[in-house]
Image 1 (cartoon, one colour):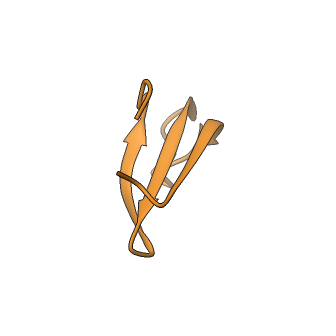
Image 2 (cartoon, helix red, strand yellow):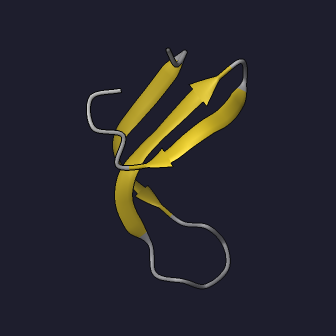
Length: 40
């Protein structure tokens, strides 16, 4: 289980690639998952 999930975020990876809509999950103060988490 994650400590925090941010849904419907615009995710940018900093490489210049196109941004994508998705979710970001945080666990123990670190990013634990990115993308479409679908009910996590």
